[in-house]
Length: 160
Image: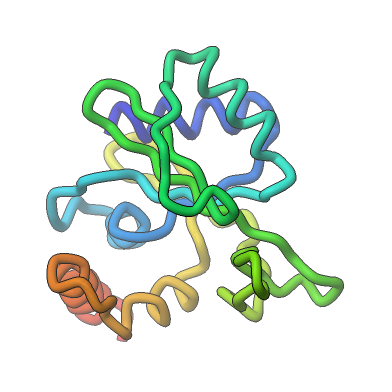
């Protein structure tokens, strides 16, 4: 939780947009920690990456190599891994992940500025409808698929 507070504070202090997604977003929407987490998933504007990289580095976070730097980056502080996924938007404000061959639609609606609180920590989160849609289809990796199913079931108990 401390890393989430630190990350949110860094982004907020510098006026940078970010959105929690993945398991932590589920927890923030539910107001409780539902499972252990391996990382913190943040969506950020691709154009903000250089500034975000700089402020995270100044705050003591270390760059961690990723497989595809065209769509994201990672930073580590102690045992915490923050995985950043780049987003871009078009004239209609739809949200895309900027894959090199062709951007892929993530959301037909803007991510907005919803904030949720968990254990005294306030963070921006992706919209609930976008989160539910993303968790409704488990990923291919068995471990990731198990997390997606657990997240979807937790959301379903409260929001369906």
